[in-house]
Length: 168
Image (tube, rainbow, N blue to C red; front, side, top):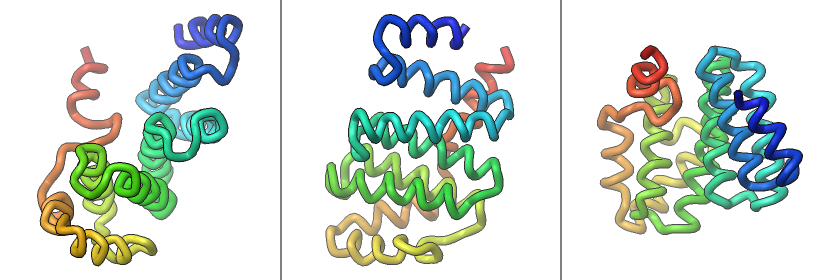
């Protein structure tokens, strides 16, 4: 059904309209959920490039595309690429909103989930070590440590709530 809806969106709105890109992202999510990670990666990379071009690299939809691609890269056994994508989301979120905004908390939780899944720790990856002193200076290190040390719910499409919804 996504392909039919997408064809209508492309015909009516154009290939780069925000709703068309959202439909493409939904299709990529379905590919991910079906375990078609290579196809999902290809679609997500295209969507990310299109959103960067149309909306800018710091738009919320572009950040959502980076996050989705990160989880796909993790499934394709490319944790360093996944980390780099999520780190960019975190850095941009802090720059846009400051260290205490809910978007930053979500980005931190996603990073913590990735680090937990890969057995990594803060400071192990390039760019992450620079973040800790900045957070300490801004008074947000406690929240950052909490996000890294506490178990978090998965922030990606293979979480239990999604599996439950798709299993019914």
